[in-house]
Amino acid sequence: MERDLITLALQNLCIQQGKDPKEVHQYLLMKYRMDVDLLVLQKRLEKILSEEKAVA
Image 1 (spheres, rainbow, N blue to C red):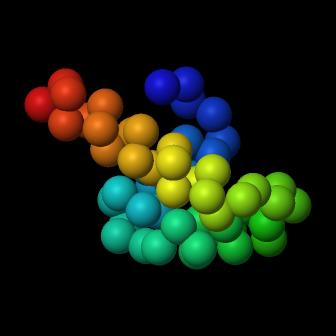
Image 2 (cartoon, rainbow, N blue to C red; image 1 turned 45 degrees about the vertical axis):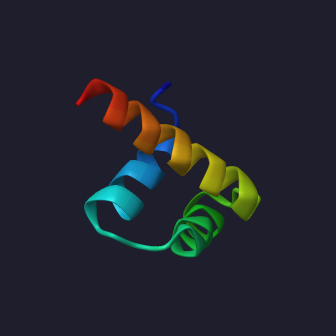
């Protein structure tokens, strides 16, 4: 998966720090003024996790 801002935020906050996708949404909104739909964040997180399982 591409290393874009949303993916990096999901990997850092959700996977490494164990935070909720809602907190990633708030982070992107406050820091970068990016209004990303929660459904998009959840789908991306699922895709990241499935790729990690496939590699492992």
